[in-house]
Length: 383
Image 1 (cartoon, rainbow, N blue to C red):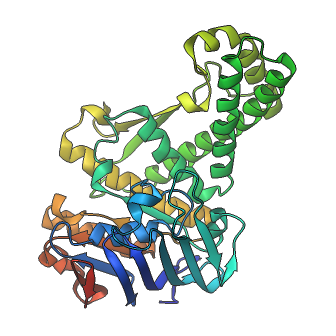
Image 2: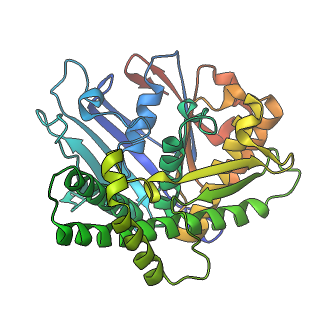
């Protein structure tokens, strides 16, 4: 488990323990492989295990569920996820939990690293980067822009740990501005201060997203043309109606703040802020066909998405120096045997630890002895 691949040390979990998490009253498993394959019937709890791992990173995890939904029905009302990891900073113990009775909207998820309370979940990024692909993401290219922004921000966060805090602070400032604009006599000095903060944060968010898209486009370009998953082209609408090229960040912030001030009346009538990074969108194209991903077939969209996630995993390792943990939920059923085998080989070459789920263990036959196979059934896990 401690071997390195390329210039990035291997990062992975060596144990996982759950208490009152989803359908698991209590669970403790040892993990001993780069490939962890979870098989079982639908509803057995395979994705719940994936979700638990996804909570070892900032945010609400791969389901974005409330803490009340995540805590086991009939349990204590709280939950905990504990793991031992060979992380970027060496062996460490990670824990994230919500105490019983703290599952309301204002509940805070606590994090401990080596039994020390972390100041925020962002500290988890010093040890692990967790990426995922789930069936819920299959409609990413045809769904609402908000889903693509969230997908984009997760990608940015894996190489820029400060991005999540910037985005949260921007949203908070924007809500304050929207509330002030709804008042009969909003203090213009207060508004100007909030708009300056929004401009600074908004430009930083837009620049970080643009950098990620440029890096990812270059990473995709390095893949061979006959790769098993088609290459994607990416373009970004940053949410601002003025060009960023050739302007210093300070000038961009000044322009963004000026436009916010000019738009107060329009935004007040609309009841929301009409421009900024919260209006951004990511467009994805099938490169070989020069076709929007949204117009591609369902199978092509899935293959494009897999290729995009794999390229992002490679980029995360290259930029952060941390080989990410990759969660691939119900991935194998959508691929023919040849493409499944190719996927497994690509993931092995990335040097990551990957968790994969499926209802049929035979779908993972190409992994052979490389994988640790676990059978999931009604809140229990067996080798």
